[in-house]
Image (tube, rainbow, N blue to C red; front, side, top):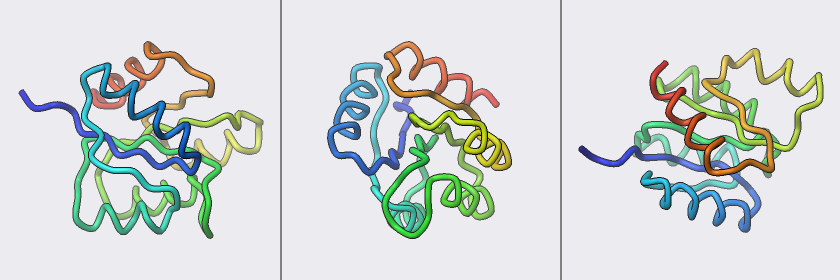
Length: 122
């Protein structure tokens, strides 16, 4: 059985490295990383991960919610938000995209594993 491939969209290099390290320790495979919505959309033109971990506050002209909305229009790839932004208006915007999960930073390995496994079963 092949490892679950995960695409990370996060604009903080240190957080990206931590997520990558945690995912590898949990037995997942990181197939790519992007720090902007445009980079994420370009990556998805040629690669199809099993799941996307999407930060909400990312660099570039689109935030993670706008990027997730475009991804959902174009692809059938589950996604989980990973963010430190859990205020009411942000949650309301995020709910409109019907994410497959939501993880609040800081999180532990179990939070990450559970969110991914549940999203993959949807």
